[in-house]
Length: 296
Length: 325
Ligand SMILES: Nc1ncnc2c1ncn2[C@@H]1O[C@H](COP(=O)(O)OP(=O)(O)OP(=O)(O)O)[C@@H](O)[C@H]1O
Ligand SMILES: [Mg+2]
Image (cartoon, rainbow over all chains, first blue to last red; front, side, top):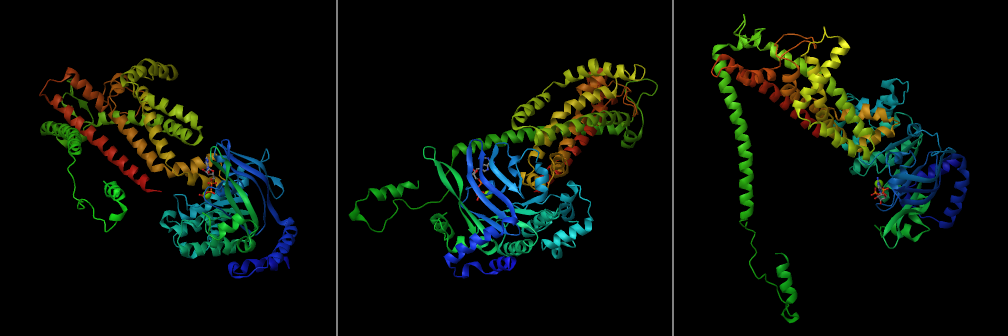
């Protein structure tokens, strides 16, 4: 029943369905308890600073297995900062510090002794700008398995990853061509294929379709729904329709003035719930303003 | 200009509000800007002077070299294996190969030193050094490029040569030798290669690094397998430019490598490079108008062609690496 229900939630065209708010609230509580065993990330009170100023402040939320979780909010509210916490990408920025705890399948991601390289092997990432390596299509796919010392059948990994990223048919005859010879949309799917090649558990996507045309965007969205069967996906998007179309849950962030005197702003999680609820019946006024386009 | 009609409109009494006519007819015709003309002229002059000087030098070089080739055939010049401009039994043999051999031998030794050191420093500076360390180290490294080559030549002769002789034995290593000059020349070129390669490495988009880290790459893997290959054409250009400097370098070899043209691959032999020969001949040993004197221009022209070719090659690579991402 559980999976059938979540399946139904996913397939319904979210924006066209009238929603009874009380029923939904009830349903939400049920879902929460039901999915507790499927918890992938548990974020508790996370604050990220660049230098002394917090870019996001006191964020807590849970991310569940085989769901697509969308992070939305106005520019500069810290979505990228937040999503980069999940694979410790912020470690690469010397001034960034992360406070609070993020557990991944019950393990503290930021505990001493946790190797960020191991973390990133399980939690893959796709970036806003397609950024294939200046190598062949094939070598792009095989980079991950190689650096991770995975003993794999190269041809098989290349074909499987490209098929899962819905790119195989387009590039099967150009495997040895430079990745730069592909179109922008193909390059982005190549980046997804490259992330899939190491068979991660989670895929983080920071505005994966923002540099693409509507057709390529559509393909990436279809792809995300297919990938959801195998992976847990967290996606940052500026596109409301996209969040509404593809995601199961949505987190809305905004910026708040931190300090009146200096006008310093930091990001904050306003509301986190099922995507349907966020778009049809948000509990916070600011969420409503944002999703209906009255803000930003 | 823009605000003019606006102010007059605002200053108009409210009653006069009607169809507004601009006080002057709109003109988009260009105005003469005299200052700009003068500056343009001066800049053009600067460019012209330097270009004409270069062309002039090259022209003189080739015209005088052609005098030489009236007496010595180009074929002989490139195939004869002895260079004997200053008398002795073989006086009059003008085969440039021993000089080219000397130049290439010293250059090869210099590159063996400069490429690993330069590339290593570049990767360290770009990928490993903390921003503060980089801000200090890069200028210090570039300072090395400012050491006068005559000082480096002296350093080769009085420090590097004794060290080599202590290690390999005085019977193996001659007092003047290619190795000592080559090693010191390599050190001289390190800043060129390091600085230009560092530029190429730093120009690799951060996104490439991040995606490599995102796939579980370690720092070393990201630096070696992603960043360095992505910057490869820039690095190759840096190496080629370094090589050009080595081929054209004069003082170090004139002081430390000797004056004995010789076809040899032994780095501990005394040799003579093309540049060192020119110094020797210009320095008074060749009478004006003699064949030996004219040979200076032949060797000079060949040297110019070699460094010119290398520069063109380097430009090609630089252009390629600009196009990549
Ligand atoms: N490397 C950094 N160093 C310092 N400050 C940073 C850095 N990256 C981001 N910030 C700051 O942190 C805040 C949040 O930035 P972030 O990139 O996370 O926002 P975002 O929600 O992803 O915005 P966008 O929608 O425009 O991508 C911004 O104020 C930004 O200036
Ligand atoms: Mg962002």
